[in-house]
Length: 85
Figure (cartoon, rainbow, N blue to C red):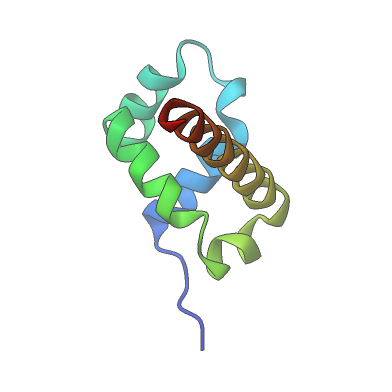
């Protein structure tokens, strides 16, 4: 049986889905609304999008974030290969 998301995990996913609605910079909204540093927020979000529970909670958001993550990882790998040649 899959575990359920914690309140914090749901809050992170919900924030990521809606953050553009809030006035101001994203980093400031992360601090004020979630009580996290931006670095910690992105660490937790990165781990969270790899879970089945997050995918079940918001499949469109998690799918989009996974595609962005995979694209950036591929770009980093390509840059590293270019440097080692």
